[in-house]
Image (tube, rainbow, N blue to C red; front, side, top):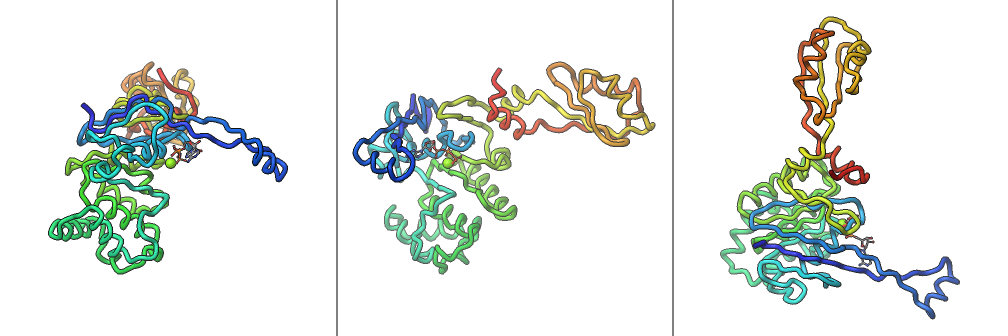
Length: 330
Ligand SMILES: Nc1ncnc2c1ncn2[C@@H]1O[C@H](COP(=O)(O)OP(=O)(O)OP(=O)(O)O)[C@@H](O)[C@H]1O
Ligand SMILES: [Mg+2]
């Protein structure tokens, strides 16, 4: 029983096919040609209450479109979607009470109003009791520091300030489900850290999160499940740890050689691994399905003396890059 459920969810956009130049435009006026492009193509997703899910994929994969379908902003071409028992595009108001949404690329604040007024309008829209509203504002000030932003016109906010105010607006009514579409895009490290810390706190409060991002640090910090989509289709759905485990074949070991053994001697001895480095610092990349770290160390010790050594964690970035390059899938 998922809190957020989509079955065979599909959204097809009709894209005009127009020839080049003015001639093409005029022709298009009289004789319209369209091409149907599926942005989301038969996606099945089920998210349980309290889960934090990263929804990733290359540009144009269909991430934002999925989120818009889950919000009820878009109507699916086919398939079904249900969020906390509500069909979003059928009952947008009931759905809006359950969800909060942030589009990092676009502010939802009223551009010419101070932040305080925007939040006040949202309070009225959601019909929030006065005491509840006050408490929420205090809480959101504690974690996002929005107090100082209250009198500022939205259009005068810096990007980081705008994102904090937008987060506050999305979370004002304390929704159970929160969709975040690129919540850290363009932010500097300090604000990014603040936002990530805030997202971890949301999680700890039991909020269900779905997070779209190109910043893999967001994922590692906040989520333990990852869904990867490409060209509108789901290509992976599982725990982050499992993704690393099943896909990150290459491990890297860094060693400090203490007896001056040259690198090429080690490389020759370890013919199935990839040895690189400079002087006494050597890096060995090996296929962890073929060798254990212990075997690699034992082999090096046959030809050289080793001081320090350590193993890199499999980097999620490597994995996702491979997914994007179509090099994956077992
Ligand atoms: N309103 C629309 N009308 C026509 N085509 C659209 C519309 N919105 C999105 N698309 C197309 O649907 C596809 C998926 O777009 P979407 O915005 O969902 O991608 P995304 O995964 O969010 O990408 P990004 O990482 O760049 O944000 C793209 O090919 C896009 O051009
Ligand atoms: Mg997008």
